[in-house]
Length: 73
Image (cartoon, rainbow, N blue to C red; front, side):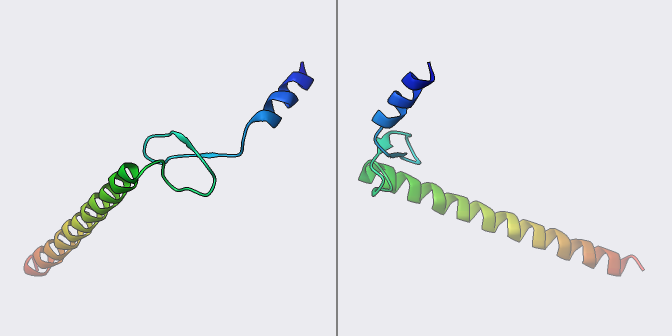
């Protein structure tokens, strides 16, 4: 049983998967197509925008809290 498992594992060509769609790709490629590369870049830009917005909102909330505490005295 284990010998069959070893035979199967040696037949698999070294590969990795596209981070966008999950298709098997060669080890030297990052994405399976230019469409997946563009999609990934768009998603990363959107994530960066959302992070910046969250940081700004947190900074505003902290500033308002400090401002309210200073007027409360």
